[in-house]
Image 1 (tube, rainbow, N blue to C red):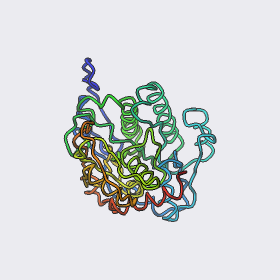
Image 2: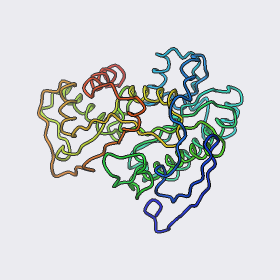
Image 3: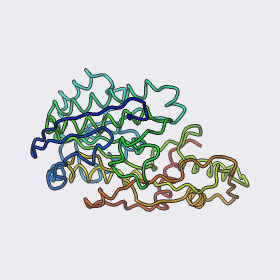
Image 4: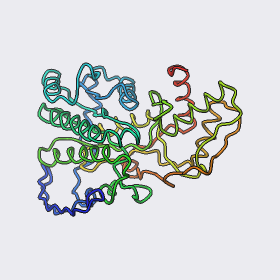
Amino acid sequence: TLFGSSSHLLFSTYYQFPKHISICSLSLGIFGSSLPQSPAMGETDSFFSNKSAKIFVAGHRGLVGSAIVRKLQSLGFTNLLLRTHADLDLTRQSDVESFFADEKPHYVVLAAAKVGGIHANNTYPADFIAINLQIQTNVIDSSYRHGVNKILFLGSSCIYPKFAPQPIPENALLSGPLEPTNEWYAVAKIAGIKMCQAYRIQHGFDAISAMPTNLYGPYDNFHPENSHVLPALMRRFHKAKVEGAKEVVVWGTGSPLREFLHVDDLADAVVFLLGNYSGLEHVNVGSGKEVTIKELAELVKEVVGFEGELVWDTSKPDGTPRKLMDSSKLASLGWKAKISLKDGLIDTYKWYLENVKQ
């Protein structure tokens, strides 16, 4: 079944690879496990040798894009192409076409997307699927047609089924129904992965995809209504400290396990993949380390310096017991996360104090 629907789809498709000709028959639901892989290493070493290459980072103002820009600049890349939404509307095909024709970037990192929480996904499902599909189609297709050397598409761990095995391997993609609360966004991201694969298969275009775990760091969303668990805890503990509150109440038992990756580690992984990976299958990017929500809350409390009591409201739901990405493939290529959770929290809180209006 497709995304838990009642219709059954079976595709018998013949794929021709530009370098290693191979024919396979596959069914929707086992993508990744049965697809032949392009060589993963040693094909894109030239990325690091040309620091004047034009690199278009789409979505450079967000949590992810800004970290990638910082990383590239720290490595000495001097020709970054950065455009705000006002400068370039990625949903408009003609505008994207003109940009690529004029600028002719050598590399593209697609970190731009329409994102939002459960309420937004439920309220604007058409926007979430249409806008993200428009962005992905316009950028990936223009990248191919205008001679981009390589594109890296960034997705999300929400692409995986609600009841995927833990840790979640890459080949769990399309193996079961999605989490209904964000399926519109997830479907669009899955389509982005498949677009990258299709352009590689049909055109030999070097398009790769990376799927990060839960991210945090500078430029995160600290909004009281729609922030994720880590920035929400940081904001609440800070507010309680400033106001002299005696306690902070957190929903649940604190027992669920989660994985967190500092966005600067993700940026490091993105650059690593640009220089060292040219495979068909998408790649998980995670820290490989789990922490309970209770341990996370205690650590955030310590970093913020809140001296009151942490109270757990066990009448409230816990959510999914465990969510961890299997990042062994990326580790086998030679990359591992470097920033500890505590160090990452200290860095994030410093940025919060300096940049978020209190």
